[in-house]
Image (cartoon, rainbow, N blue to C red; front, side, top):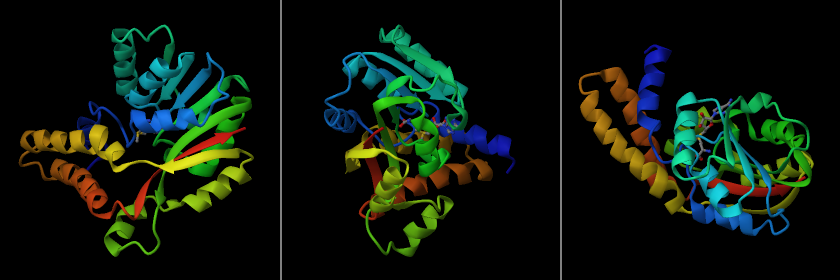
Length: 249
Ligand SMILES: C[S@@+](CC[C@H](N)C(=O)[O-])C[C@H]1O[C@@H](n2cnc3c(N)ncnc32)[C@H](O)[C@@H]1O
């Protein structure tokens, strides 16, 4: 299948989901509770914001000014519209940008937030590249997929071969230290954080698209690949998960 068609079907699946990855407000609040020294009106950067459910939650909960960056124009338009509808537009700036080449003045932000997105450039590379934008003592909150248990069964190991950098919580903690951050805390996302705003709406969307793409074997393969992802998680959520890491410069 040509790339153009692959991405058309891919974005048909993901563009209008509530989130682009696992996460929820409970985990966001739990991370914020670990940062009592965050200033009252912080400057925040949300990297790989996607549809921006967490961007809007941050704007509502902590106030301050949020800059949300992503490289997918559809998400940026959608987030701009939703911020306007929800009265958040004066405090949320939505910006096109490449997370690997962010253009901000050094030490601009009190908090850099990135849920389920740092994998696009690699955990260590992201931590190193983004540090310059944090004020001294500024916080970095990232979520990243991790192995939760040794010896995963072949099914799940094969599934994750497409992200060979997947590693353990411990290895990520070592990377955080090696990149010169202090670790404030970390926790594993609940299963609800995968299902409520991500996999449950995803599975519903796949049903709609199966009807739309009936008879198109290439499109069906993209659809079934996403279905398999949800099934692997349902079956093997003991073995892998998403970890929130709260760090300080
Ligand atoms: C799995 S989604 C997570 C989105 C959102 N943070 C969430 O949790 O719902 C990953 C996001 O990273 C964005 N992305 C991928 N590569 C990027 C890049 N090089 N620069 C900026 N954003 C990128 C994608 O467009 C997508 O919105």
